[in-house]
Image (cartoon, rainbow, N blue to C red; front, side, top):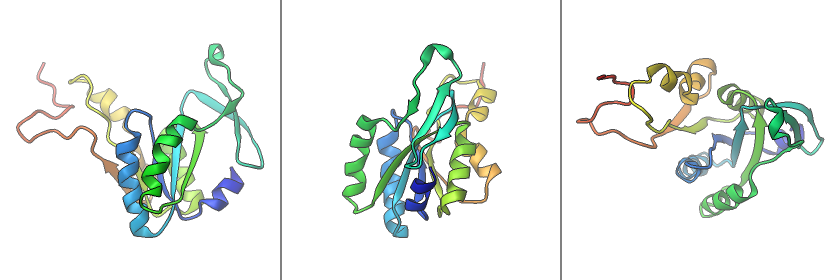
Length: 172
């Protein structure tokens, strides 16, 4: 990853998941264009453990679940193909990489290593109401905002109207 990190020095770092990537990346591209930087799209595999990095930045890993073995970890080419035109439309250079580990820690550590001006993530889409612990324990944005010093931009994915209950309000 070292050579990749040198090439993305100062880029805005954005955490992506396939289901919400376009909405989050569109906001991150806008911010990168305003900062005059490129965009580092990062997919994080929390269920894998890295065991080696190639000189070209390729990460070799193994799954924590031995039933899903794959030696090489790579950013999904189909997802990259969906995201690249969003960046190109604004003239923003896009670099895509896939890393392993706890998402908030990995995104924060990468942002530190590449001196990113900020980190962009999507909000968690509302799930079952009443799962306060699950909602907050799984919030990458919440962990990032408390565990590293860079600004964190959270892209709202499922805004709730003022007249509606918030996802963590439990009325059961």
